[in-house]
Amino acid sequence: MKKILPVIIIIVLLVITASVVIGVKSTKTIDWEESFDEKSNKPYGVSVLYKELPRLFNDYKVRTVYHQPASYLSANSEYGYGEHVAEGSYIIIGNSDYLEDDSVDELLSFVDAGNTLFISDYYFPQKFHDTLNLSVDYIKNEKDSISYVSLKHFNFDDMTLDRNKGDHYFSEFDSINHTVLGYSKIDYKHVNFLQIPFGDGQVFLHLEPKAFTNYHILKEDRYKYVERTLSYLPNNNVYFDSYTKMQTGYDGDVEKNSNLGWFLEQMSFKWAWFTAIVFGILFMIFNAKRRQRVIRIIKPLQNTTVAFVKTVSNLYFDTKDHKNLIDKKIAYFLEKIRRELNLDTTNLDEAFTENLAAKTGKKKEDVKKLINYINLMKSKNEFFEENLIKLNRNIEAFYSK
Image (cartoon, rainbow, N blue to C red; front, side):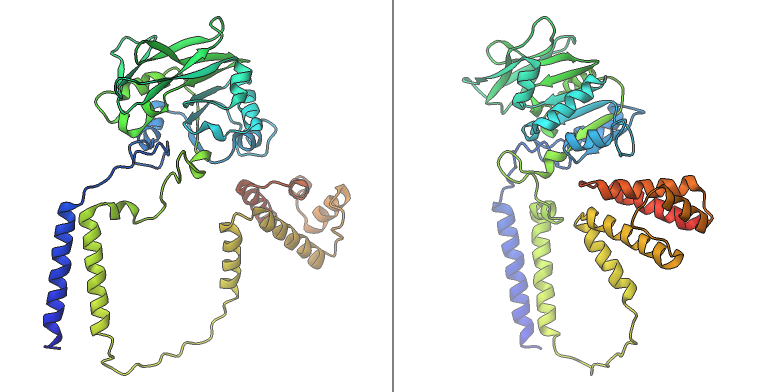
């Protein structure tokens, strides 16, 4: 051990010296990717805006939407199977090109019913252009990377946008029915913010999504532009689009999902982490020899049936195989009815409902509600987590009453 000690000391000194030298020479690079991700603290993420939405829309519900509008809004419509009826303002910041035609139709139906749609992006799906009669063009910033944005109905200095290669603007729109709310300016003013009536609701289209990012909100007093832009929206519930943030961004992955990713970007922590790993490896090398004979521990046999069931169920749940779980719960429930009550479950009709209520002594209305929901699930092709939870609650309520 005495011979090994100098070697350990030399290795430790080398690690410390290398960490100091690399730490001094290394410079932290900034990721300027325009992800518009509400979970991202990078310059062009929108985590600051996302955290401030409950304050901006005080006393109203802010929901994050992780589904295509076509499925989410139809599920949460008046005749849908969702937990509530979607009403309020639907907000999309950047990456709106993921919207498919059926989602555009659903969003416009949402607006037509008296709600609000707000999109801030450089361009929009073609169906918006065709339906709302507008065109978007681009002007390159020839002089420098500075441009300005302003709002028509607010008297304050134009907000500066640096690191801006050019501006998108509305080159064509209906000047009679469309209301101009804001401008962008490089050499001269261009319209970049419109309010468009559609049915009983309003569509707000904005062409500078970078204004809503962390970099601009936290710089000087640029947050005032964001506050005043969103003040055009009515005081109501907010639906913040996040479906596209789980997809691919403009130039690659929106965010790396490593829990250590941020910490390893901090040079001091990075080398402290590597030093700890080196010490851990050295400790294992020099303490690998057993100092005491291993005493074998004989554990009693365990009943792992419950653990196995939990593991399998968690596997289905984690993979979001909701259809498989729903089918199995329905099959198990009907099998129990056949085995314990000797009822034929081939046809889940009115006669079956009456027989089941009579044999179990439960209210016919409660039994009918459960059987109707089972029939609904057996006829569907697309399932969500809410369907599985609701089915489980109905079956548990049936057994508990």
